[in-house]
Length: 373
Image (cartoon, rainbow, N blue to C red; front, side, top):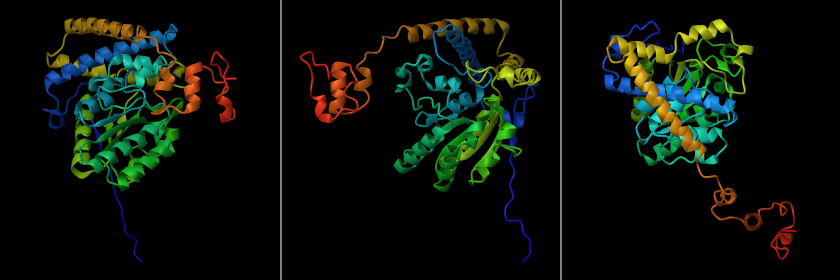
């Protein structure tokens, strides 16, 4: 039998505004109106300041562990800009810029990292609570896309994850399910080069992480994840594919976290200083500001004004988070079940857990004070 090629493919890399300020007019002209670019840059200034303040809150003991978003703002912001209101945005924990653009109050993120569950109570927009378990959110996004397809409501789902998550079984299950069932979901892999301290080269030996999507029959593309214009373009293509063809797309966004993995990490122990310095020059905010200044859309004066706005905004956000009414002990019971089981009703009444593990008949035995024995 003759040897014949049964499959060939390619992965395209998309870049419109590079770190030197070169702008591809053919791909980028008219992609984002000037006023929107300015608005998104202003938004990034506020998000970057919140990141700085959140770091200080953790260091001063006013908040728990926090994952800095610095340097990685563009992928989620571009997605939020492209997605429609009815669509679902399913994130992990480094997508503040996109979540805030979509309408999530900033204090919700601070409350989450302060350990207050009210930070996960979201009714302002179609976003899910932060997913800390690596890769679990991909399954949620796939399920939401399947539900939208079943209901024929025209909505799609977009989910975010790191390069390390593509080594999790959850990724492969979600990708296989989405591709085989023709589901309208966009998978955005934010490849920042590190899965905590594990470099991408140890996660994936292939030239691109995007190749992992090909195995499941998805359309795949690699993009400069620090390029706002390129991210908007690939997101528009991917969302069009989802809405028109009910097909998933895998986007590998090359980006970098300029801070540690979290405030519990010290990246100096495993990350080369020269690598960090190289990526600091590729900072998406520096790149976008240079673009705006070249077009006379920004200036040092406007920068100072926006920094002042950011300081005022974030100060109020911190105040809102820290001065929220303290939760009551009953909240744990009131929001756990639709109908509270009898043994938990007893715990709610007595605020004691001595009924756990007892024979059900013992639960009814109480003293005159109503305390379970």
